[in-house]
Image (cartoon, rainbow, N blue to C red; front, side, top):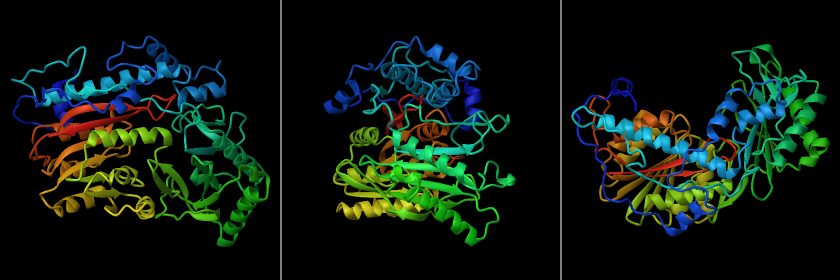
Length: 495
């Protein structure tokens, strides 16, 4: 149980205590098809017994640095910590973790809505909201459609090694370990990474390990689709090279993957980005197409989706279909409501539900993703969608003010791990037309928890949270990341 004084000091809510506004009525059940997917394989029930091997997994995680483990095992324990468990056991571990997150949220809210200054403990065998069984991923191994590989010194000291990091920059013990053995990496991604390493080792140009120490070759990102098409993106630090020298390196890279040894990768597109920052968007430094198709396409929920190199798309395509179907069923969107898709990425959620809604409004920071969403809408003949590029905290308040009051708004938010900006939470909370909110989070125990609290807390004038509080009704964990502790948690809030 969280300390009430500590909680209040952290989130800054000081209001008269009153009853927690839980609806005691039984929440509406989701469709039988939805529950059938969740129960398929009898993975787990709504409440499961604490998994006996979870403690062993955690203990193993703390001691992964053991010198007796191989480099591959040590990397697997960091990147895919649940790889030693069967998938059924993984789901039980994840379900327990998601249950504790929901319990923690309910405990926080009970503090804020406390009765006479007392704090009621959550039910020992249940929750106020309806926590559904975890929905398993249809694909367990090699499910990633996007992987980003780093360049640094390998276990043998070679600075031209492509893989994932072990160690930390703070401790100065970074080692780059090849990762073809990881269970979540598809063979095609590993193949491209291996040939990029071959290219680096025959290149006369050094890799860029630390910006201030010079060097050029940096990360590799590989994107694939279900048809087997492959996009590769190479980032390169220009340092002090002239345009003529940069062009020479681009030609060398292109020749390697079209005519040289890398041609076996059969890339459908190769991009090159000059970047002087750790992460660089297309607006900051354009992606340069060296050869091939400018986009990759995916078929999802009856739509042909266009994906640009800079656009977000869920890394597990088969799992994403189940996630989006879950969002649609929870949202209850209909012809009398507007669907507001915040942090919409390539617009798949809104586009897949457009036929059910009177209108879809999407907001997304990345311009390439908005261009993709608009193209996808036009290609698929969807005419009631409108997508806006920019920061949600700037666009959303004005967008909500422009809507007519007679239409109810169903909001769906799927932010990055950093959660929603406080101004976005304010805009949602203070818009009376929003009666239903579906919040999707892959890190609900992080900053998103603050978002949940601000959405559900009593009105607070100091934080400009003046609208009626939302109430958590249902929670559905959807596993998009087998072998890792991560999970998408879909939360339904209403008021």
